[in-house]
Image 1 (cartoon, rainbow, N blue to C red):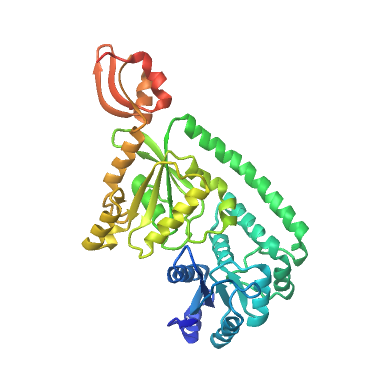
Image 2 (cartoon, rainbow, N blue to C red):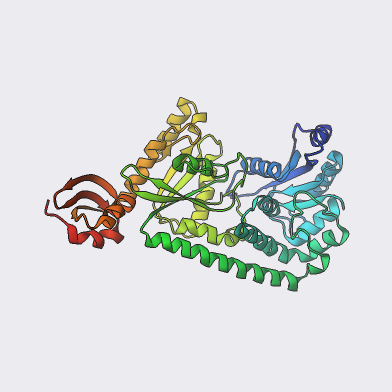
Length: 443
């Protein structure tokens, strides 16, 4: 049984929050972690990530407490003695909330609230992530996906949540953005079920629009690349570097939630699409995977996945495992994948050599400096050409549409203009072979 305190004091938090009237007062939190046999993730790295999540949501961690358990206490998750210790920490630091690193059952949350204090929120990792998603969702689809996940999370907790809503204990801030602006009377099972159904209908409509857009890309025969990876691995920065676009890129967890597609022109003139998707995380709640299914379909429909990894992170191996688990969960495990270690500009020569030795098939880049980007584009080009057919064709001058198609959708090895037409040697995607076949030459 251990208790570790951070260096942030109550006075420091108050001063930090009151430094300017335009910045809202940050809340104070105690983090709680439990170490159990056969844990998929290390407790230390998981709690470090939880602290970053809390910071992203607007809370300062003032204390962290942990406990080793062979089995979870069905009443309070942690042992009764630890629950009392958590209550003492909350009082000593005058915190606004207690955040558990694992998902609590409704009864565990309710029991802990009675032990800790009526004015202290008790939330779990899932609620914290949902809170961050509520802050960062910008598109209509993103907001609907977050609302769906929130209501699915809320539904089994209605009894425990009712006391919060009835007494207005949750107030504002972290963990309280569930159905913001709604009346207490709406919070019952029938209304929540109705909201879930309504949101699913709206998402289904938006998904049809997304599917039509995706089908057009499929019909165009464009090679599709999807970026997948841990949140804050630098996916948005990488797509900006590759395509010269301006996708939002912040050094924050879950800075972007909506998928973004851009075009990339490969060395021989061929165009492919690259789609940035929502970042993954350890213990990604199932409700979020389900709610963001339409966005994650951008990954399952790709021809190639670039698994973007933060090469500077000490927890990169655990992050890699977390991403592979989600890829398996959504059925994307058989799609060709290139591991791309980003942020290598932050590594010294020894660290780079160690990564290269451990992951010999990976690509190493810096979206910040541009190092390794050219080699990555060449890898994408080879992957796009691996299913193509090498063809020598003579295209008549009255078929300029085929020459344009060759430049947009194929990789041109050579091109010359002769008396009878345009002679092309090109790598042709499977869907266009029949278009060029009538013009094959014997050369």
